[in-house]
Amino acid sequence: MNPRSWSRAAVAALALTWLVLTGFATPTLAASARLDRTPVSAAEYEAFALKKGERPASRPLTPKGGPAVNIDWHQASAYCKAGGKRLPSAQEWIAACEARELDFPWWTWEWTSTDAKGGEAGFKLLCGPGADTCACTHAYHPTWSNEVKGFRCARPQPSVMLRDRVVAP
Image 1: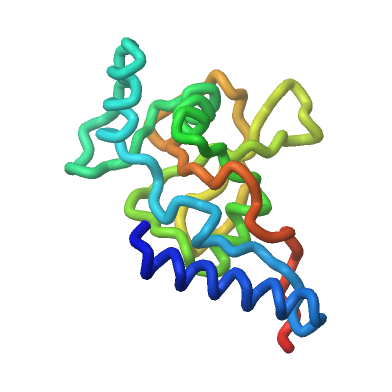
Image 2: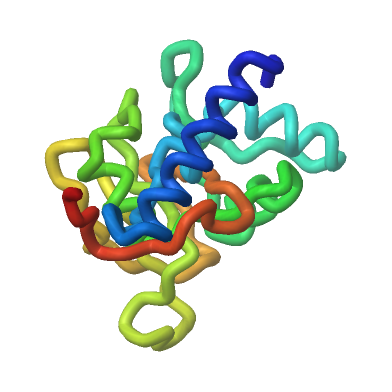
């Protein structure tokens, strides 16, 4: 981040803090600051796998820049962790989707860190596929993968407290 971008981000953070402390706004998800705008690409994941000395996951033929698919939850989580990030929760993913701050270049379901069905059998929720649904309705075992399961990463810690909605001043 260049100094000019950093100073704009600092001013925006201070303004939000002031609005929250004075009661003019309720903190909410700053989606663009927390979730990657696009899913992890196949090329990005392959570079990560090769760097670790692993064979990249198999994937169907996709145009250049296609998403990383055939990735299980453990692989997705490891990728995010290696970059100092994490998988988003289903709540974060839905908020960012509803705010229209995510790009959906492909029709894939995305892994989240959220346990499905109260953590029953270790299943995780997947969200997607795309800006028209903003739903997290699929649950899969973390070891399962297929050609429609991808992922994106999120910042390691929330930048603001997550609430249901913003209260307008």
